Amino acid sequence: MSKPYDVGVICGRFQTFHIGHESLVDTALKLCDRVLILVGSSQECGTERNPLNIDTRIRMLRAIYGDDGSIIIKGISDLTNENDIRPEWGRYLLDNIDRYIYKTPELMIYGNDESRSRWFDPDDIKDVTEIIVSRGKIPISATQVRALMVADNRKEWQKWVNPKLHKMYDEIRRELMSVPFYASEEYIESIKEVM
Image (cartoon, rainbow, N blue to C red; front, side, top):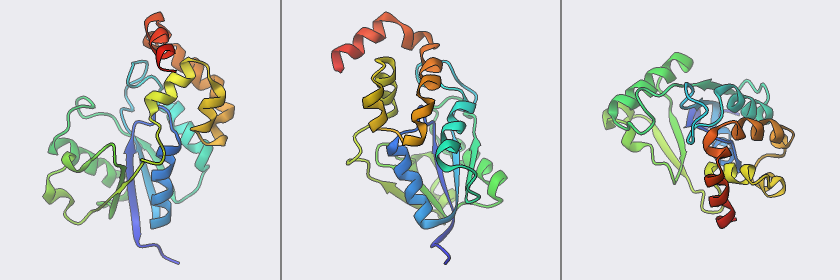
């Protein structure tokens, strides 16, 4: 049975992929025959905002979704920097989407904490439906997930990620802790105060 939309798109950095992100993908899978997941800031790793490399982030997604033919996972580099939100970025994103699905998507899905509408000139997405998935019932962010890993709180971390990622914990944590920001005493002390 055909779903309401042919292709839906989700774009995120997924530093690291958690159940809030998963809720976006689950929504897309219910509504779309195919889902294109674009892993943003693919050119960057080893920084505070983007500690994990693109290969690790794609492997996390593959660990959960396997080789499901209805899911297309691709990296996308920033046009200039990740805070450069303007219609040129939106056009760049749509051009990259076209490279993978050969058309403008019918649906774009994102969380209520990350409005994407301002990325686009309204004319560029006039035929695109946007769905904002509320994440109010999933009170987690990638920043919090990373803090749990720095604190080496594996049990709490496991509550916020798909069980298929549990076996990757040591590998992901090792990569995270290789970033000077996360290994710094200052950051480690700051998360102790919060946790």
